[in-house]
Picture 1: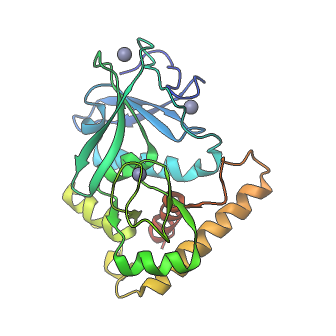
Picture 2 (picture 1 turned 135 degrees about the horizontal axis):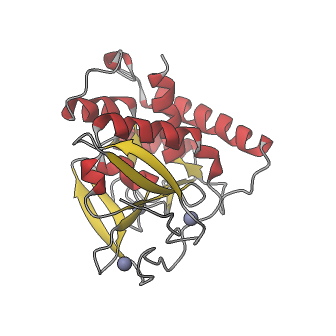
Length: 244
Ligand SMILES: [Zn+2]
Ligand SMILES: [Zn+2]
Ligand SMILES: [Zn+2]
């Protein structure tokens, strides 16, 4: 548990502290940088998050989704010992994701996308969906690592070699039921029987409206912002479903 605020391993700004319930009932403080879309976990913190807290964190990420302002730095520093964090991979049921760990075991840093993969909120895109998206879009941001993927050419991420994954309501629903959470609304309805065209339409519409919102706010744009952000489109998709 973090007592005093920590510096973001990427941009070195002070991270925000947010309080969540732990599976044992006690409180847990997570350090979040919205500009970098990153989360710092002290050892074991991520596994101790109660299912309700995973949802609360998801809500927070949705609320603050417009604040991303810079790409991840080349060198990330541990907020406790300042040593460089080592990039590595972790496996979850829904795929690989990238984490940055301190060799001194002070904790690890990861993107919001990596957290979604870890919690099983994503599913792999089918090859038909990738083809359909490729006809409409050029490059997308990999959910697992944030790297740019040209989906007209690559059907897996060239940076982290993960399969292309999408945050979607059914995956979230399945993950929550794995966590023993009561069913969240009409999951069966969500996306069931939808064609790849419908999914592509829904994603593109959501991401376009998010980008409009972002322009209105006149925020500093993410570098290379012409690429399609699959993660934020997925967050919108799940959010729309939650609110039904
Ligand atoms: Zn940061
Ligand atoms: Zn350290
Ligand atoms: Zn990747």
